[in-house]
Length: 216
Image (cartoon, rainbow, N blue to C red; front, side, top):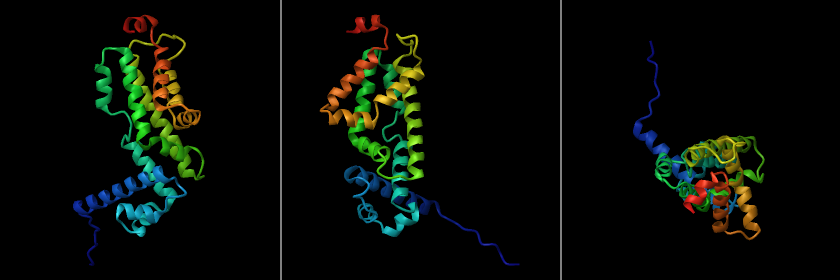
C-alpha cells in the first residue's frame, strides 16, 4: 500500500512567507498613498519590497487585490485605530475637555501619516471593484466601532443633549472625522490645526455646560 504523502510547511517557512507578505503590503501602502492607484505599478511595489513581480501576482492576484489587502491590513492592525493603551490613557485623564483634545489630536496624527490619502483612494471611486466596495463597508464598520469605544470614554456620565445617544455621537464623529470631509475643508483653505480645533469645539457642545464652565 502506497503511503499517503502529507504536505509539510515548516514554521520557519511560514514566518518567512508572512514577513514577505508584510513587506509587500507596506511597500504597496506607501506607494499608493504617495502616487495614487493609477501611477503605482506592480513592478514599482516589487522593487520597493525587493521581491519579484510574480511573487505579488501569486499572493494578491492583481493591483486591485493588492490595494484591497494593503488597506485591509492597515485597518485590521489598527494602523491608526484605537489601541487599548490609548483608551486607558484617555480614561485616566480627569479633565473631560482634555480627553476630547486628546482624541482629536490622535485622529489628526492618524490622518497625517497617510490615512487621508488611503481613505480617499478607496472612497472616491477612482477604481470600481466589488472588493473595494466591501473594503469601504468594513472600514466604515471599523471606524464606527472605534468611535463608540472613544465616546464611551469621552462621555462616561452621559451627554448634555438628552436627545442623542452615545451611538448617535459615534456616528456624528465618524461623519466629520472622515477623509472626504477633511479633504473638502482643506481644499477650502482649512489647515489641520483648524480642523482639530473645530472637532474639539463641536464635541464640547455635547458636554454638560456646567462642566465646560468649570474647566474653562
